[in-house]
Image (cartoon, rainbow, N blue to C red; front, side, top):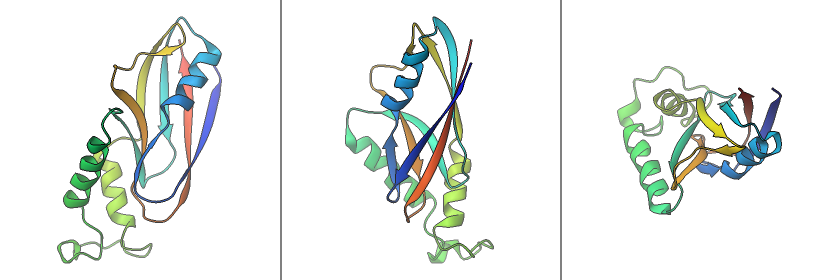
Length: 140
């Protein structure tokens, strides 16, 4: 099965909904039964499947990660050695390590088998804009 690449322009930290773009890829191929791998090719952002109905969920998730892993210039993070790329870089790597860079999603009759309130998000952890690449691969 073919590979497809999505390019997502981020403007800073946050969750960027990519569900519709991923679904479009699966729909175009229309497999009866398959597994879709969604993979982000970066080490300072990640992928999550999360609630897509209440935006408070996204705000709370971002607030939790900001408290869990503060910026590198926060006094509690003075132990960091990797600081050459700015105070948000190493914390972004930690956040990405705590989440995931690859997600497997079952596909049936060309439809992602997500739950009613689930969406697929690129979770940007850096503060400056980035152009992120997500690779989609369907097998089955």
